[in-house]
Image (cartoon, rainbow over all chains, first blue to last red; front, side, top):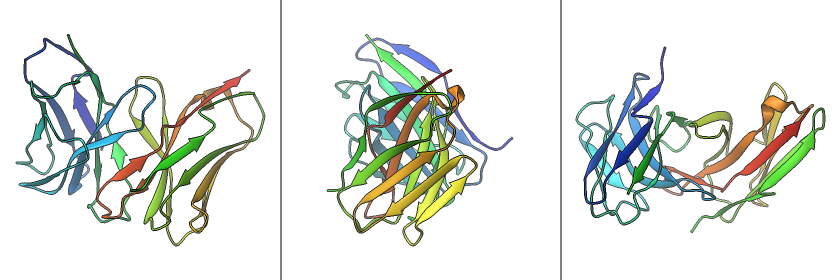
Length: 114
Length: 112
C-alpha cells in the first residue's frame, strides 16, 4: 500500500524536552511538508522540502527543526524553544513542489506538552 | 497576503439534501485549489483538485467549481448521507507554489 505514515499517533512530553515526530512516505514523492493544526484554525505551514538535503522555513518555523536525509523521510523536531507546542501535526507530500501538484496527507500526530 | 475564508463554519442538514459549501480567497493569482475532508482526529483526505485553468471538477456526488476572477470556489454535495459528516477544508497554492494556504473549514453534520 502506498501512502504516508506518521508515528506515533499520540505523543506526550514534559515542557522543556525536545521531541521528534516521524513522517515516512513510499509514494516516491520529491516534496514533503509539515503543517500544524490548532482547534478552530486552518493548517499552517511549518517547513517544507522540495528535494533531499534541502528544506525551507514556512510561516511558523520558530521552535522547530527538520532534516531530509532520505527521499522517503522528513522528521520534525519540536524543540523547547517552541512556546506553544501542543497541537495536531500533519505531514504531507506531493510529486514535486511544482505548484500544480496535489498534496497527500498522513494521519497526523497529536502532541501534548505539559 | 493570501487569505482563505470558508462559510459557513458549521452546517447541519437532514439526509438526502443537496448542499453547497463556500470558499473565498483574496488573491485571484492562484495556481490550484484543493478540497479536503477531515474526520475528527484524523488526517486530510483529498477530494478534488481544480487547476487554475479549470472551471470545475467532479467526483461521484461531489462537484467543485472555481471562479478565479471573483475569488470563489464552491463544493456541491448531492444527496447528502450521514457518512458525509466531517470537516471540509479548502486550500489554495501560495504564490510561490510551494505550499497550501488553508481556510478554517466547514463542519458538516448530516442527520439520518
